[in-house]
Length: 238
Image: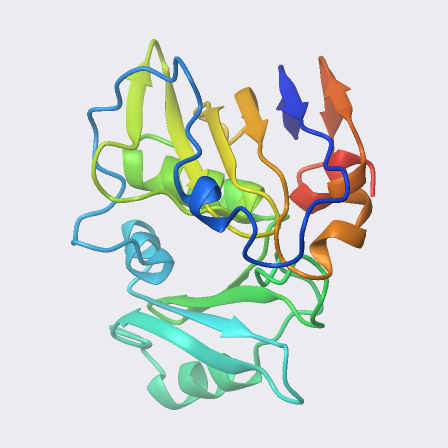
């Protein structure tokens, strides 16, 4: 479940076409977010497949925007330690999912993302729905970064984007997308429950985004509950 504690989405009037405020979008920052002193990833750049190695020996990220699913990135050794390597390899090839999470196009392109992972002979398909169950307990900044990235469709930077507050992790998410720059803080508890602590969105600037309901609405949501499988875009009332 995703618990929204405080969310402000700024209304967008009719502004100029693409490029009118892109430089301003790049500078958008949430005021009063505080300090984040933990890294969201082991390497220099965030990789969801590398992050999944905290639970699996191998993970590949698939995209279904084409006629057939394609692998965008992978990490680890496929079917490492499997007793039946041939059967495991075949199971990875056959694995698929009709659901997943937003492919980053905000609904303007078909398809979704999901992960196929292996641990010994075990082959697991990971979607937005079962992600928390697969990774829990959420006991590291990396796991918290994965949960927040998938649920909010914004992946954090590696450096200085996570902090431990009490028994939960808080993650700072920043997007400069022309669909509307987003700057927010979310918290993730040990079970994978995500709560939006603070969120602000700036005006959309790209062609097409201005016509979406997300860009036209002013929404103030307090203490609302949303299912974990719901795309972040729908939380604005689309």
